[in-house]
Length: 141
Image (cartoon, rainbow, N blue to C red; front, side):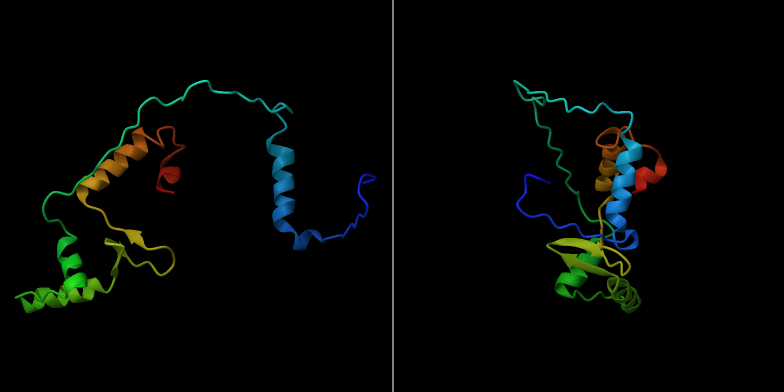
């Protein structure tokens, strides 16, 4: 404190500073077993030599096709009962930047994907980015 020209200390009650209090407890408890030094490694070359891009393309029509057509173009079906069902179902969906999303009022909109895309996503989660997942709850999250 002697190196500063002016110092002001303000007491903030613990109840008003919950985030900082929780962070200080976490730092005190969680990292006691780690060394108190920072290790720095300088890479001489890139650690990843190739980039793999997986393109997933939907073939043909799927369960979203009629919803997308109805929402974009207002397409009318010949069967009045099917059109009524589609109109009611379409109230739960919206198109954002060309993709179909299911509206979810208690959280973010959910992106709709085809069966092929769903298989890719599940495979990527289990074998790729989340290959070392902690369990089912963590994968769902």
